[in-house]
Image (cartoon, rainbow, N blue to C red):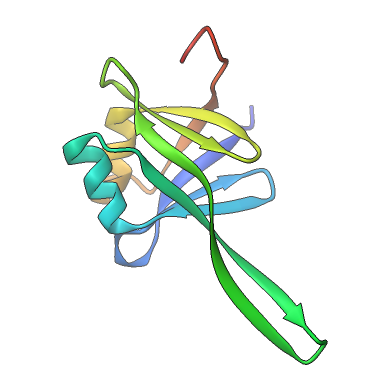
Length: 113
């Protein structure tokens, strides 16, 4: 069975979120704010555009947010392509580098969130 998305660690403590063809990230400082203070943090995406056919412009756009759920046992990720949930323990293991990646599960509104 294919998981709908994965969470993995990148260089410098950045967490990468891969969902379908989309790639997002949570910056290291935001990961700390999420885990230690349960703050809502932005999920960003790099956008590259061609201007005038001659040069590329790279921008960072906020495409969603991440938050710890009300029970404190899971992290909810809300992006343009959908909402996902991951157990807090799995999120922490990836953030600490103890696990290479962890699967994301679809968040069904009214049932899991």
